[in-house]
Image 1 (spheres, helix red, strand yellow):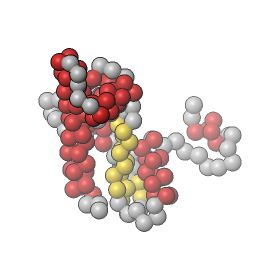
Image 2 (image 1 turned 180 degrees about the vertical axis):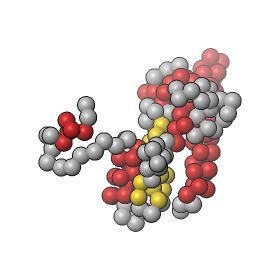
Image 3 (image 1 turned 135 degrees about the vertical axis):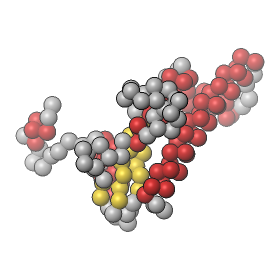
Image 4 (image 1 turned 90 degrees about the vertical axis):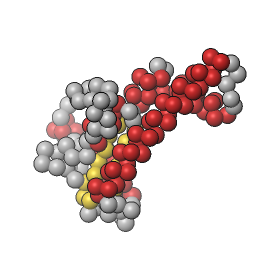
Length: 156
């Protein structure tokens, strides 16, 4: 499909946009006071967009804001882009599934159960510890990236 397929069926001007940048447009629409921000989508794959002066920064090749490929650990896991330690390899649903060896709904169900009560057996305790550590690592990598991104755009 291309934009002409959509344009021929809709009475509006159409253009294709990355989902992260579409989310940034929605944030600008819903929050007229928003001046500068980083939009991070935590989906199957991580994505991002940069808003400055109420505009979505596109960059010279339209790839600005691809936060998923920002390196957070040069010795980290191999990313599908070919580099190592991209934020994507730590902070996406795919990364959580790969690290835990379980589908996302099961991972979060287990995480909720851990927070409700302590493990009953040594096996459960080991699994609980592993799931908790995966989640803690996820949050630490995400916080690290957010802190550095905020330094770049100086948003409030």
